Length: 166
Image (tube, rainbow, N blue to C red; front, top):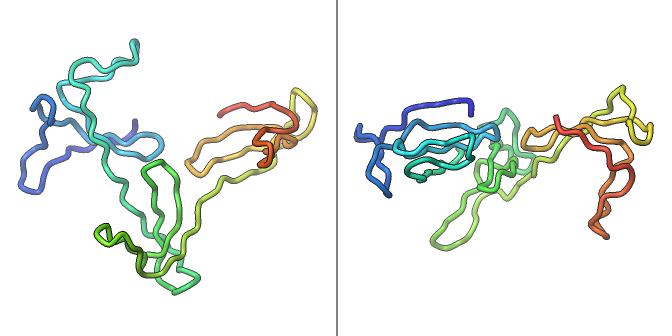
């Protein structure tokens, strides 16, 4: 948990917990970029891995980031959007969703962010092949054997099983 900010409503009052009526604490940003507020009457106990006191947490929406790239379909600026499940995508800024009619309008360009793989100058301790550094779209990194692949038909990993999370 890296960044903390005070969250105050537009009218100048602090937000209150709907469970116990206490004020909500600071806005906390997780490593994955999600933001939340915990009730000030509750706290996280790292030893028991449970919340002591009120367990209310308010998850906040992650705002889209404007990118310096243009949409290949219409030329409008692109946005970097994080879904509620933590997946990231580039989408056209003219794309909008109407919840009443449940329809999308504007440009339909979407590009899902995928992980990147770069070769390393290390060899696999299990089989002796080269290792690669895989970085997921959410920023998680792992070293794995270059022979490790995924078979979509059988839905199983193939090749060497060496994996080391960074």
